[in-house]
Image (cartoon, rainbow, N blue to C red; front, side, top):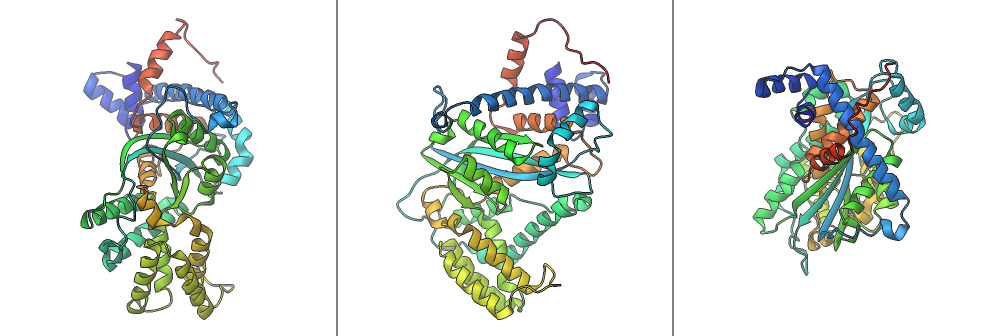
Length: 424
């Protein structure tokens, strides 16, 4: 019965909807508050199991941490990605003393992590591990730029969607309007459509595993690393870490996944190249420039793009005080810095040859699935409640649900005594 209540509490948009479904489908009379309490209690237990596994993993010698458990088969292709979502956290004065203690313990790290000071919006971290099916080839299977990436209508729409996604992280109050247009999987769809036209098959997802937390990035990294070790990812024949340009992503890669091929999401790269190519000049003049730069990016000649961007920057001049973020000088300068910082992660012909993904839209889609449950202008969470929900959501969204094993272990360890905590 608790398993059914938990499913309703985690996989509906709210505890109230979970209560309604349980009443309609099972004839179970239970309040929304009871659904919430059971869900959060089980979520805390799962978080405890996760933390214990991470602590045990951290004590292993380095060589063993980069190996795999003895009974696990390493996948052929292993891919790791990470991204941040958004959730509203209640002021600690609203919560329990226990929740306030959690806030106080992590206040310094969270203040450095969270970008939305002065509001309730905070960042949650989502990690996605995928095993994939693909063929390794002798040469690039798709050397020519697919037509979809030099289609003006499609590129304008794609870059607009990325801008909407970026603005959503800054203006959370507008999120309900954003939700209808935010489609992070557009990059994956574009690549698949392009692949069909040129008889190239991008890698396909076989299995996926997720982890999520509200804790700081330095704690999130070991969680993701332990899960990767648990699934044998460090011994996979082909390994990749895919992400956008966030420094948090690449700090995580350097600390925990440096043996994985680093790949910058090509869709984000395209958006910067398109914006810089069309900045400060008519579209008719900027579009041919974009096509040339996009061709170089696709073919791995990013240094040519950087050279022409530097020349364009010299023509416009460096950004001046008072220039807004839409000023051509600022747009070109931003794109130039972005490509310079990540040029070592943009060898796309080699990634395609190895059968590795070149877009991070998979993890962005995963973030969207978490958001469906925890994000909303009317949803406010305590730190403890958010952590519990994020862990349980990760459990359900993965290919292999660990909860059946959890219930068996929990039943085997039951003492027959109810666990009560003292009322505060």
